[in-house]
Length: 607
Image 1 (tube, rainbow, N blue to C red):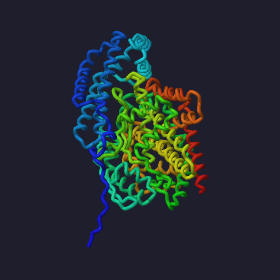
Image 2 (tube, rainbow, N blue to C red; image 1 turned 90 degrees about the vertical axis):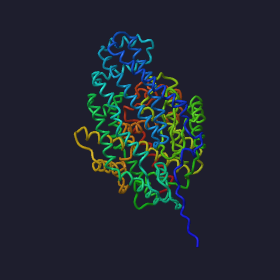
Image 3 (cartoon, rainbow, N blue to C red; image 1 turned 180 degrees about the vertical axis):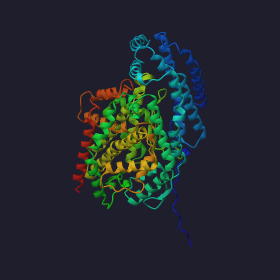
Image 4 (tube, one colour; image 1 turned 90 degrees about the horizontal axis):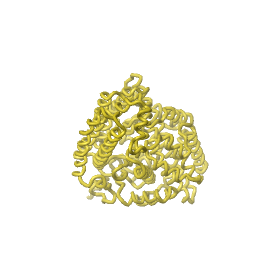
């Protein structure tokens, strides 16, 4: 008698199983940990010298310049130390050695900020005219010009030297909610196994969950959703306390800085009017008809009695879906970005050939995908690549960030190389738009066109509509705390459920886990971050239209935007490309394009 063999569980690869060519070359930051320690020691020496500048900044332009230069040098070293430590930790969050390095680097950064916390209060004892005159006498006048301008603008929000020192020393404490969430989300949470489409038992991970959401089998989608979200439901009280703590911290810092609200505080850093945030939400919510139609059309094409949240991202035309190995995704990204010119192409090829990308998912590795710029080395990109069309678009997206950082760091001094997220997401989503256009040109049949249109609509859904939804939720929970009300999991569940119904419309039926999804979003631990995906997406669509129309000079204008780093305010940078985000026009155009594409899918699908 034979015994049936149970299908093997597909486990998560270990890092040792991955070829080196698919791994980051972190030795490009520091060749050895001894080099890291040497820089750590050098930073401590600079921190000790900081006090020598206290009380002298008004003495001369040279003294002020020297102080700012020393602080910049210290900041650059701290950035490199943090990057090496955090990127090493991201490769395996279970390794305590890198957790220790990360904490040491963070504590050093906090100590460095505290050591130089006297700078802004002391500079602001100098009147504006004298300060401008001193800046004009700097040995290099094009390094700190925007800093001085911004400092004068932010004068009402700079506190006394004593208060600034306390705020600088509070950074480690303020990191608590994000650090705890990251440890729980990436290292401690364990997800159950489910049966895939052919009956294999597969352990869920974040990447596998995303892939299962694209399955054409509703049972698989439901099981993956229920198994994945049940883990967050089990930890809901802890997750609610983490997010509430983060929001309370945001409100605390805004009040200490004497801002009207945490929204004003978050947007003021890059001089973005709060009207841009409110207009994004209001304009979008006044134009949800296209999204509601898309939900109804999705339900009809899938032939479902009820459309659930786990049904909103699976391809409607799965027979046209296909796997994309990583090497093919690299080549498609290169081909798609040809319109950006040879300088851009050369940078991309260099990135792929020199291990800027950590490609595959391994146990303990940080989830999702990101790009991180490093001024002293080169950008690096984390992927958890799983051979999907979506992952190909994600690669193009992250390489947009990487080339933005590359061009910025090559063309700007350290002090002006850091650009805002408001502009950053333009570079990434434009690459996605170019990839879509490239793929559409290869289409020879209606079904393939439907598949790509479906993919683009879903991308707009995820990158634009969902981010506006998330931004509205973030605004609501901050406003609650600012009114003196307490946040609770039940209250956040209710808000999330209300917004879900508003955005998705009557065609969607909520499942038991829909209201908990706020609990798994890491971006909420970076204050007022998510709205910039939506504004940038709208801006990138406007710039993409200029490329498609062959507008004269658009390549150089766009590369100029990427090279400009943080040398201007982001609203002004986008105006250089002919996009004005202080108006509702880019958002309205995005809503119209989405609605038109939904109509086109309806027509081509014949439903």
